[in-house]
Length: 512
Ligand code: BG6
Image (tube, rainbow, N blue to C red; front, top):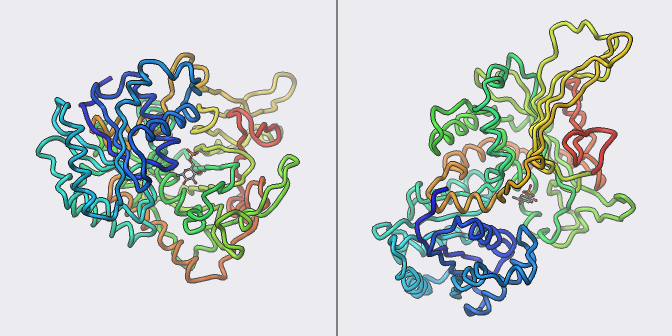
């Protein structure tokens, strides 16, 4: 594996949750794999007043709590950990104050003095989104965007904008300071190993491509379910909702990779051009049809496995009359030659029965079923690409039940990542941080495709805003969402797959 050039990673919002739970543990794991540059420094910044020692202590505690291998104090006091922590620094700033950036610049320059590969900087914005434009402008104002002495990159967390207009506005602001190649927009789903494997499954196996189109695929179903509620993020979530929080980014990225044409080569622009074409071909749902094609819901109080679960409106930070959706299901089409007429059904929600993300390709049935009388259990071939948990792939096909007659049963052919022993499956942030360091933006979203995704979502947002008569259906916490979402798919004589924790099970035999 390529070793990245020496660099300084400057984290804005370094005293926040994301830094502690995701970024620093991922960087530590990269250090353990020897995939960080030889000379790598982290400079945390934020309004909280901390000195280097306090910051290191805070990061050490969070590493012990959050590291992939659940480090013990013992393992942690190794040489690697000491060296990792010694290369962490902290500089307190008010991110809105331009004056503070002059001192910040000096500090960064001091840290990079020892680096032999030039002054390479990565700025990671782990702050509230409202600050993205301001921080970028202030970085530019003190010349920290200038790449004459080394590369200077900006990594930006989602949400990227609040709607189409704000995303365009943010892109404009960023492009006023950085060129597109310097900007790395995170969608952590693209960092998931199984999401990347979707590309490998499709484009390294000759058997799928001939079937991967309207001639053989009946419909595509994508589910991203969570069993947790909004936890302590009620304040943020109530102004976002599932459409902005999950659909505009993670789910549409999965749609893009599932539906894209084979790229001519495996480089970031070829891949991203192809997903962009999918976004451009998404048939926008007219505002007056949103009620028919989009179902939104909100979880209500319920008992799940004996435990009382609060309804969404009782969550901290959520208004008691909130109409924010915690569940969305959408039926839509992709208007191109490959997918013309094939319905895509996507759904996501909080407080569903289990945490599962998967893509299901439902193939068309045989043109004439000669075993129809005895085959009630078999509904056609399905290819299930499981993103999480029990990561893997499953093909469902019909097989004769041994014995008299010709009874056909659905059986599984499956592969589980857990069967690969001794293979380290990197976390999404490990992969994405490493890629940014080596300058590979394949798994980051490009400005134009973020805007194209917002364009698809915009009529839904507008319809909900302009037409309060479109219902927010309640669904009991722990259920599979509103019944009307079942009707969305059942109206086409289909049903959702009811996935379980284990890839091979579904429906009635579920371990959740
Ligand atoms: C985040 C959303 O982007 O993705 C969260 O803001 C959601 O609301 C999370 O819980 C889901 O990510 P994962 O990796 O747990 O599927």
